[in-house]
Length: 250
Image (cartoon, rainbow, N blue to C red; front, top):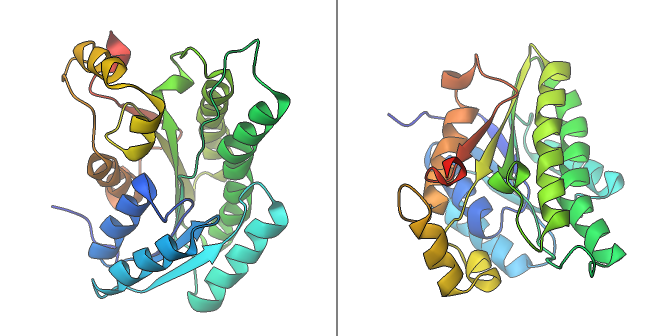
């Protein structure tokens, strides 16, 4: 049975497309108020808001750069002006700028670290402080199996996700006992982004090396997020759960 989130408000970074959109719609279908952060595509963000409102839930889209503390603070203020509290934070936004280690530019390194690691730090710090003050809260970090398993051509991305896994552990200790912090180590997911980065031949090889012989879906991630945000996970904190079809085992 899917948990309900009536009278709860969730803030999702990178919520206008892909995995973030799937998470937003899943929360909305289960009664939550949803705040989605987006960086540039206002049309996509407004469409997600309309989709959420069609389920009967309330929604708000806020534009902002999660790597800027001032921007994150403004987004929090905007969210609290509409909804009284933020009960759940999903640090979902992330980018790739793949290159070999010897050819990687400083900008490619800095931008990926800024969005994938600094962003969750800033959001978790500001929203975590709010949650501690209100005496409850859940933070869920969307990480990747590349946080523990290296990938060629992605030293910036892999390092950012390894750092995010450790941030999950550190914040779980510091925000306990009132706030639980957990993560999801995502494997290969059927998505536009994955199709842009990898060839079909590469994806076929990955599926062959995966015990479940397929990629995951955005909805499967969204369902695990729902569990981590629910009361069912209230005795779990500091964990990053691999959701990769068993690929990390091979």
